[in-house]
Length: 146
Image 1 (cartoon, one colour):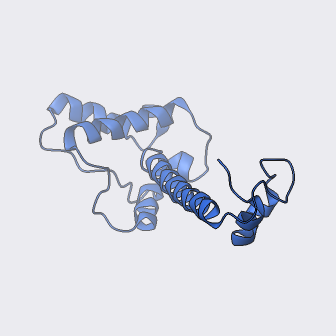
Image 2 (cartoon, one colour):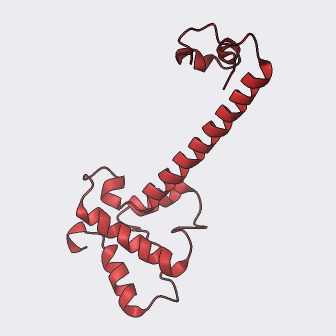
Image 3 (tube, one colour):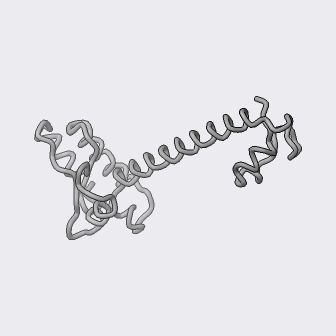
């Protein structure tokens, strides 16, 4: 792809830290506005996609993590994996994200991490009783009992 690295760096100063493709900071073509605009368009679209992907991963990590890990009381253990299995069982039978419609993320985190509240997703109506029992055991407040 031919573009003027110098004009791209002027348009976005953060790119000045990156090395130019040709090895020099003067660019390879004299002021190609169209190609540098195309590059910036691709760069901003990629940037937005990465932010979206990061947010998506962050929500998945938060919703599938157990209280002791979220609060920093322990590292990631097998008990954390078992808790995640319970959340996945919920998602399979409910066909929705856990805590969907329960309000702001920070409130949900507070309720999940608070041992008095011990918030968990609801039990889906379509879930068989034996699966409900398994799911609730996966969500036990004490990691020893998971």
